[in-house]
Length: 127
Image (tube, rainbow, N blue to C red; front, side):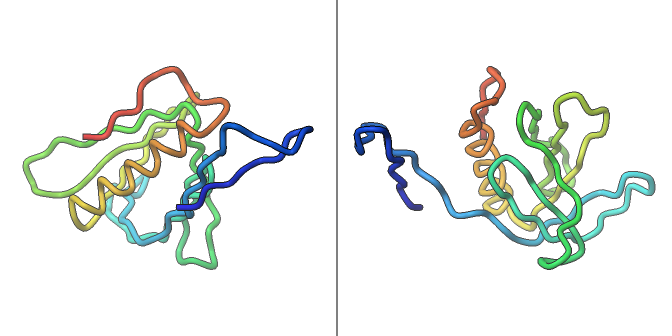
């Protein structure tokens, strides 16, 4: 994590902004029509979660501002969660390989939402 101090007119800032490194990695995403799980590369950059076939082909964005992020409670032992962007009908189903990986992604998404100037007033809670 890096702390970045922004300059003001007098050259000082009493409230430095902390910026985390972008989160990247492989997750599984449930396909929209066939509901099969497909591996995809994800890159969390500011308030966008980009995904695609690999690190070089990040073609699709998910806007996280105002999105609802929820853990999928299931008895099958998988580490799933959903993201439903604001003003969109589609819900994205994601799956991590471990509980630690799942929590890491959900915390990073929560932090990205809270860092946005346009974040919703709903609380961001990761359990």
